[in-house]
Length: 223
Image (tube, rainbow, N blue to C red; front, side, top):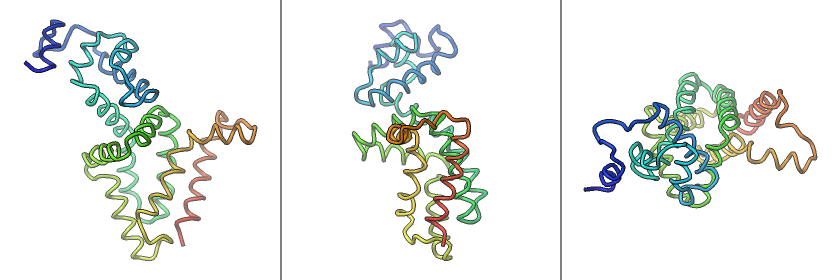
Protein backbone atom coordinates (compact mmCIF):
# COMPACT_ATOMS: atom_id res chain seq x y z
CA UNK A 1 0.00 0.00 0.00
CA UNK A 2 1.51 3.33 -1.06
CA UNK A 3 1.50 6.58 0.92
CA UNK A 4 -1.52 8.00 -0.89
CA UNK A 5 -3.56 4.83 -0.26
CA UNK A 6 -2.62 4.87 3.45
CA UNK A 7 -3.75 8.48 3.77
CA UNK A 8 -7.00 7.72 1.95
CA UNK A 9 -7.69 4.69 4.15
CA UNK A 10 -6.90 6.60 7.34
CA UNK A 11 -9.23 9.41 6.38
CA UNK A 12 -11.83 7.14 4.76
CA UNK A 13 -11.41 8.63 1.31
CA UNK A 14 -12.42 6.45 -1.61
CA UNK A 15 -9.90 6.47 -4.47
CA UNK A 16 -12.71 5.97 -6.97
CA UNK A 17 -14.62 9.12 -6.07
CA UNK A 18 -13.72 12.57 -4.76
CA UNK A 19 -14.21 13.25 -1.06
CA UNK A 20 -17.25 15.05 0.24
CA UNK A 21 -16.18 18.66 -0.10
CA UNK A 22 -16.97 21.88 -1.90
CA UNK A 23 -16.34 21.73 -5.66
CA UNK A 24 -13.99 24.69 -5.17
CA UNK A 25 -11.71 22.81 -2.77
CA UNK A 26 -8.87 22.30 -5.31
CA UNK A 27 -8.92 25.99 -6.22
CA UNK A 28 -8.92 27.02 -2.57
CA UNK A 29 -5.96 24.71 -2.00
CA UNK A 30 -4.08 26.16 -4.96
CA UNK A 31 -4.75 29.73 -3.82
CA UNK A 32 -3.55 28.96 -0.29
CA UNK A 33 -0.54 27.06 -1.64
CA UNK A 34 0.50 30.01 -3.79
CA UNK A 35 0.50 32.29 -0.73
CA UNK A 36 2.46 29.72 1.27
CA UNK A 37 5.08 29.13 -1.44
CA UNK A 38 5.46 32.88 -2.06
CA UNK A 39 6.27 33.45 1.62
CA UNK A 40 8.15 30.31 2.65
CA UNK A 41 9.39 28.78 -0.60
CA UNK A 42 9.03 25.17 -1.67
CA UNK A 43 11.14 23.72 1.14
CA UNK A 44 9.75 25.92 3.90
CA UNK A 45 6.10 25.53 2.92
CA UNK A 46 3.95 23.35 5.19
CA UNK A 47 0.98 21.32 4.01
CA UNK A 48 -0.73 21.83 7.37
CA UNK A 49 -0.64 25.61 6.95
CA UNK A 50 -1.95 25.32 3.39
CA UNK A 51 -4.84 23.14 4.59
CA UNK A 52 -5.63 25.60 7.36
CA UNK A 53 -5.66 28.58 4.98
CA UNK A 54 -7.74 26.65 2.43
CA UNK A 55 -10.10 25.52 5.22
CA UNK A 56 -9.90 21.88 4.18
CA UNK A 57 -8.76 18.64 5.78
CA UNK A 58 -5.03 18.13 5.21
CA UNK A 59 -5.79 14.75 3.63
CA UNK A 60 -7.50 16.54 0.74
CA UNK A 61 -4.19 18.07 -0.28
CA UNK A 62 -2.74 14.59 -0.73
CA UNK A 63 -5.92 13.34 -2.39
CA UNK A 64 -5.84 16.00 -5.09
CA UNK A 65 -2.09 16.57 -5.45
CA UNK A 66 -0.32 13.52 -3.87
CA UNK A 67 2.63 15.53 -2.53
CA UNK A 68 3.93 19.01 -1.80
CA UNK A 69 6.16 18.74 -4.87
CA UNK A 70 3.19 18.01 -7.13
CA UNK A 71 1.24 20.84 -5.52
CA UNK A 72 4.10 23.25 -6.20
CA UNK A 73 4.29 22.14 -9.83
CA UNK A 74 0.54 22.58 -10.24
CA UNK A 75 0.75 26.12 -8.84
CA UNK A 76 3.48 26.86 -11.38
CA UNK A 77 1.41 25.34 -14.18
CA UNK A 78 -1.42 27.66 -13.19
CA UNK A 79 0.91 30.64 -13.53
CA UNK A 80 1.95 29.53 -17.00
CA UNK A 81 -1.65 28.90 -18.03
CA UNK A 82 -2.27 32.62 -17.52
CA UNK A 83 0.67 33.94 -19.50
CA UNK A 84 1.61 31.29 -22.09
CA UNK A 85 -1.49 31.60 -24.33
CA UNK A 86 -0.88 35.35 -24.50
CA UNK A 87 2.76 34.76 -25.41
CA UNK A 88 1.81 32.25 -28.10
CA UNK A 89 -0.62 34.74 -29.62
CA UNK A 90 1.97 37.53 -29.51
CA UNK A 91 4.59 35.32 -31.15
CA UNK A 92 2.23 34.37 -33.94
CA UNK A 93 1.65 38.08 -34.65
CA UNK A 94 5.27 39.23 -34.39
CA UNK A 95 6.74 39.40 -37.87
CA UNK A 96 9.52 41.86 -36.95
CA UNK A 97 11.50 42.62 -33.77
CA UNK A 98 9.52 45.84 -33.36
CA UNK A 99 6.30 43.82 -33.12
CA UNK A 100 7.66 41.55 -30.39
CA UNK A 101 9.07 44.44 -28.37
CA UNK A 102 5.67 46.13 -28.46
CA UNK A 103 3.71 43.00 -27.55
CA UNK A 104 5.79 41.52 -24.70
CA UNK A 105 5.83 44.43 -22.19
CA UNK A 106 2.02 44.64 -21.76
CA UNK A 107 1.79 40.86 -21.22
CA UNK A 108 4.58 40.60 -18.66
CA UNK A 109 3.86 43.89 -16.87
CA UNK A 110 0.18 43.12 -16.36
CA UNK A 111 0.98 39.58 -15.24
CA UNK A 112 3.61 40.64 -12.70
CA UNK A 113 1.41 43.32 -11.16
CA UNK A 114 -1.80 41.30 -11.17
CA UNK A 115 -0.11 38.14 -9.85
CA UNK A 116 2.88 39.25 -7.71
CA UNK A 117 2.83 36.07 -5.60
CA UNK A 118 3.80 33.98 -8.63
CA UNK A 119 6.83 36.21 -9.18
CA UNK A 120 7.82 36.02 -5.50
CA UNK A 121 7.48 32.24 -5.54
CA UNK A 122 9.63 31.87 -8.66
CA UNK A 123 12.31 34.29 -7.44
CA UNK A 124 12.55 32.54 -4.07
CA UNK A 125 13.19 29.21 -5.77
CA UNK A 126 15.62 30.67 -8.30
CA UNK A 127 17.67 32.07 -5.40
CA UNK A 128 17.55 28.88 -3.33
CA UNK A 129 17.80 26.18 -6.01
CA UNK A 130 18.45 27.88 -9.35
CA UNK A 131 19.22 24.74 -11.36
CA UNK A 132 16.24 22.80 -10.03
CA UNK A 133 13.83 25.67 -10.60
CA UNK A 134 15.24 26.48 -14.03
CA UNK A 135 14.79 22.87 -15.13
CA UNK A 136 11.27 22.79 -13.71
CA UNK A 137 10.36 25.97 -15.59
CA UNK A 138 11.88 24.68 -18.82
CA UNK A 139 9.89 21.45 -18.61
CA UNK A 140 6.69 23.35 -17.83
CA UNK A 141 7.17 25.78 -20.74
CA UNK A 142 8.11 22.99 -23.13
CA UNK A 143 4.89 21.14 -22.33
CA UNK A 144 3.24 23.82 -24.49
CA UNK A 145 3.45 23.60 -28.25
CA UNK A 146 4.78 25.79 -29.64
CA UNK A 147 7.02 26.49 -26.65
CA UNK A 148 7.27 30.30 -26.22
CA UNK A 149 10.97 30.35 -25.17
CA UNK A 150 11.99 28.19 -28.14
CA UNK A 151 9.86 30.27 -30.51
CA UNK A 152 11.43 33.47 -29.20
CA UNK A 153 14.91 31.98 -29.65
CA UNK A 154 14.06 30.94 -33.21
CA UNK A 155 12.78 34.40 -34.10
CA UNK A 156 15.74 36.18 -32.51
CA UNK A 157 18.21 34.03 -34.47
CA UNK A 158 16.33 34.70 -37.70
CA UNK A 159 16.16 38.44 -37.10
CA UNK A 160 19.83 38.59 -36.11
CA UNK A 161 20.90 36.95 -39.39
CA UNK A 162 18.73 39.51 -41.22
CA UNK A 163 20.52 42.36 -39.45
CA UNK A 164 17.38 43.48 -37.64
CA UNK A 165 18.90 43.35 -34.13
CA UNK A 166 21.85 45.09 -32.48
CA UNK A 167 22.72 42.10 -30.30
CA UNK A 168 24.05 39.05 -32.17
CA UNK A 169 23.63 36.57 -29.28
CA UNK A 170 19.99 35.57 -28.54
CA UNK A 171 20.92 34.50 -24.99
CA UNK A 172 22.40 37.93 -24.23
CA UNK A 173 19.36 39.63 -25.69
CA UNK A 174 17.04 37.49 -23.55
CA UNK A 175 19.10 38.34 -20.45
CA UNK A 176 18.72 42.02 -21.32
CA UNK A 177 14.97 41.73 -21.87
CA UNK A 178 13.77 39.59 -18.96
CA UNK A 179 14.80 41.57 -15.84
CA UNK A 180 12.95 44.80 -16.72
CA UNK A 181 9.94 42.80 -17.86
CA UNK A 182 9.64 40.62 -14.74
CA UNK A 183 11.10 42.42 -11.75
CA UNK A 184 9.31 45.79 -11.71
CA UNK A 185 6.99 44.85 -8.78
CA UNK A 186 10.05 43.82 -6.74
CA UNK A 187 12.18 46.88 -7.55
CA UNK A 188 9.47 49.57 -7.69
CA UNK A 189 9.03 49.87 -3.88
CA UNK A 190 12.80 50.39 -3.56
CA UNK A 191 12.69 53.22 -6.10
CA UNK A 192 9.71 54.74 -4.27
CA UNK A 193 11.66 54.71 -1.00
CA UNK A 194 14.85 56.10 -2.55
CA UNK A 195 13.05 58.86 -4.45
CA UNK A 196 10.59 59.48 -1.57
CA UNK A 197 7.78 59.43 -4.08
CA UNK A 198 4.71 57.20 -4.38
CA UNK A 199 3.80 56.15 -7.92
CA UNK A 200 2.93 52.43 -7.98
CA UNK A 201 -0.72 52.99 -7.02
CA UNK A 202 -1.21 55.70 -9.63
CA UNK A 203 -3.91 54.72 -12.19
CA UNK A 204 -1.53 55.73 -14.96
CA UNK A 205 1.48 53.80 -13.67
CA UNK A 206 0.99 50.53 -15.58
CA UNK A 207 0.35 52.34 -18.84
CA UNK A 208 3.39 54.56 -18.29
CA UNK A 209 5.51 51.56 -17.34
CA UNK A 210 4.58 49.66 -20.49
CA UNK A 211 5.28 52.68 -22.71
CA UNK A 212 8.64 53.28 -21.02
CA UNK A 213 9.63 49.62 -21.35
CA UNK A 214 8.79 49.53 -25.05
CA UNK A 215 10.84 52.67 -25.67
CA UNK A 216 13.77 51.32 -23.62
CA UNK A 217 13.77 47.88 -25.25
CA UNK A 218 13.53 49.26 -28.78
CA UNK A 219 16.45 51.61 -28.16
CA UNK A 220 18.57 48.76 -26.81
CA UNK A 221 17.63 46.06 -29.32
CA UNK A 222 16.93 47.71 -32.67
CA UNK A 223 19.65 49.12 -34.96
